[in-house]
Length: 174
Length: 61
Figure 1 (cartoon, each protein chain N blue to C red):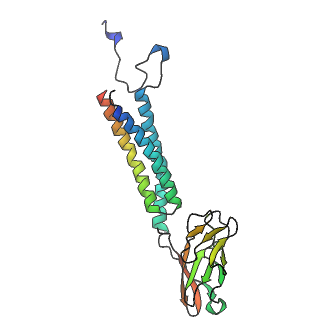
Figure 2 (figure 1 turned 135 degrees about the vertical axis):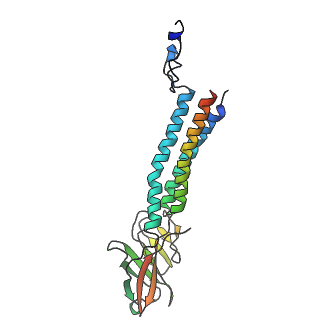
């Protein structure tokens, strides 16, 4: 009976049973480790939505094909010229550039920096965003100068019956 | 000096958590969705590892 009041009633896993009365509830080593594990848990939970959205992008949009959309007749776009169009939606501005007799490239022309429209500079042979002088390579859509870091989304085009059609938006691959 | 290895391991895990989260978000915006998912899984795996280390530390004490 004498030792009854003198022992820890049960094995508590908290940091209060080694109370030092001078500075009780001071965060001890074990308590800090618990906090670290908790932080790892918070990181794990908060990274779930990112993984989820990434998986959705991979599955849902990976090979999304839109109805073929006529952009322009071949006759009305000389070599070296460009024409603006909308693809795939009504508000997705895009640009088609005729590089040679047979080679066409098309990009969604919202700059990947702050979404200003990107223009085709025929004389210099490069694509320029006038807002902050971002430049893009016309062959690949890769950024070559200025603030943008990601390439412009490329649009796949086909030539059929003397007209150019937009088929789909290509996924960016490294 | 007991189990200071465990303590350091948890600190390293926290550091890796921060690094992986940063990488995950960036890779997501770079549209490298597979890479983003890899970092997400790594972040998820770190949590049980942290718990294991904590339990192990508990046993030793």
